[in-house]
Image 1 (tube, helix red, strand yellow):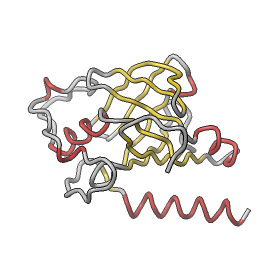
Image 2: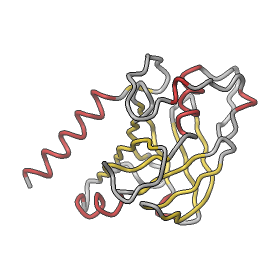
Image 3: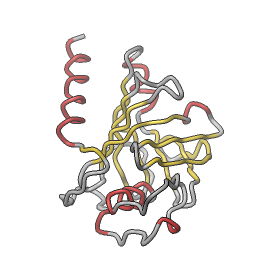
Amino acid sequence: MKSSFFFVALLAMLALGACKSEPEAEAGDGNKTDASSKPAAQSQEDVIGIVPYEGGVLSEQSLNLLDALSSGYWYVHAYLTFKDRKENFEKHKGRWYQFTRDGHITAGKWKEAVTQGTWTYYPQKAILTIRTEDPSYTGEFTIKAATDFSVMIWVGTETYQQTDVQAKLENYLQLMDTLP
């Protein structure tokens, strides 16, 4: 019981200390992958998989986030819920998501692709919606990203009754059997 509490507290501290809201811009620190060093899309027309909104061109921060989302594989390192914490942690560890700029997604576990679908990003609220053939991979999350976009914290929303979900994902360039 103490170790579960400690783990939840540690994850909360990591989420608050290592992440920031998407709209703020900061320099990267060079961990794992660094999508922020890639050239960003030049206009909103270049960005598909994002909901256009009235009045604006996407911020550089949003464009960098979309570049990061669409590079490599986003592996679940931690997945916490208020109920069945240990069971859900083990069930979701090793899951991955691969986003494409055209709004499509492939998801799986370890080296196996399990499902496909679409994704949408709402920049004004930093919300990512994922819709897949397998409902266990479907969800809507607010996103907090590390400054170099190598780590993200996803927090579930009410849309799919996932307000008790928090997940830490890390970006890797290839599929793996185990996480480092």
